Image (tube, rainbow, N blue to C red):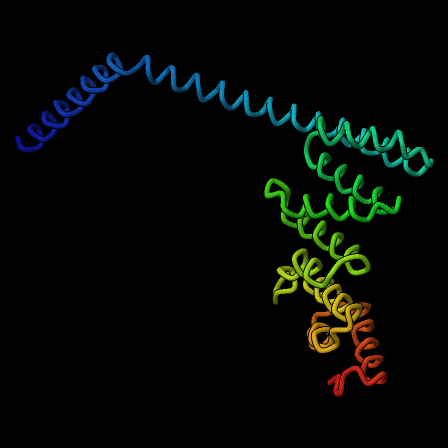
Length: 226
């Protein structure tokens, strides 16, 4: 008898659950269908957007290659126009790559001030990937070693000289060279020793830092390079 009661109770519960489901479907079914349709449409739209972005980026890549070929052929006026078009209408990473190449053309043409300004602008643009921003700051710093004050160089690259930053070796070398150029030998020594004492320093940067420390010691500009 108990088993029959239990079976009856289960059947009643199942019927109640079934009735509740039917009632819920009658009340909310159209909303669930609409949500499902929106999900499908949204996913399809996103996939379509991704495809469009990839296609546009590929086309921008072709334009960038055209600009590089124009530069290689010496047609700089045409290259500048192509790069300007890419900066304003390109997709993916190509607009910022075009900005970098345009800034390089300014540098190669001897317009150092304009090149520094262009690289510095890229370095401050938070919409640009961090690695590209940092590379632009280094380019600005290198140009300023010969043309700017130590303070100008420092404003571009000193934040990159911190421990752990992958660009620290180049940043420290730039700061050391700028200090040396302005006859601030004590500061130059500090930066070059930071390079020399870093076990991860690339061999070429390490060699240059050690050579300059030896030169300053030989010239009596510092007392101890160790």
